[in-house]
Image 1 (tube, rainbow, N blue to C red):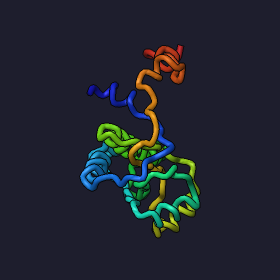
Image 2 (tube, rainbow, N blue to C red):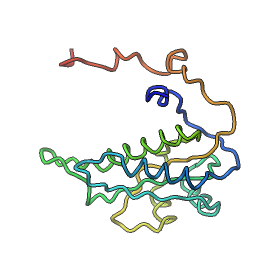
Image 3 (cartoon, rainbow, N blue to C red):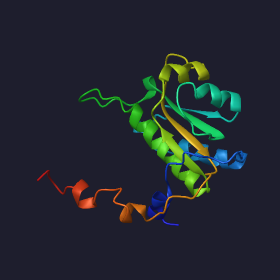
Image 4 (cartoon, one colour):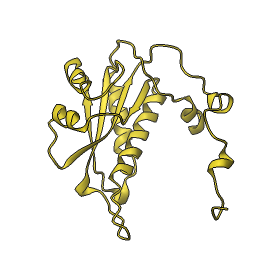
Length: 175
């Protein structure tokens, strides 16, 4: 499968089968997050793996994981993230997004469904994971076997879900 085929196959799953994800698949997803590029290769990501029902239930007090049997919480240690010297922009959120994207696409390639979640109460996540002050939760990735029919891969072309590339792309300047 080509990269574009994989990217088009992925969709947000909001209902999962009550089936655990195999350890080998979890390791591959974590490896995808490990090899993701980060600014100056600082690797500020800290990835938490939740598989126990009681842990996920606690997390659900501050978000919704849609019944996924596996949840990754992608955090960053901001002090390790690269800061652009010209405007002091810390790229920790960008690093976390790249890591999450790699993990999400690996899950798709392994036949798993996922849902990228940014709608959560950070204080609840910090409490559930017992995070120190220097670790910030950025993204949650719910993962498991989808329960239901997958979205069609051609939906990007046939269902008007995406703007045309010409509306999103500019050559040389904004004119």
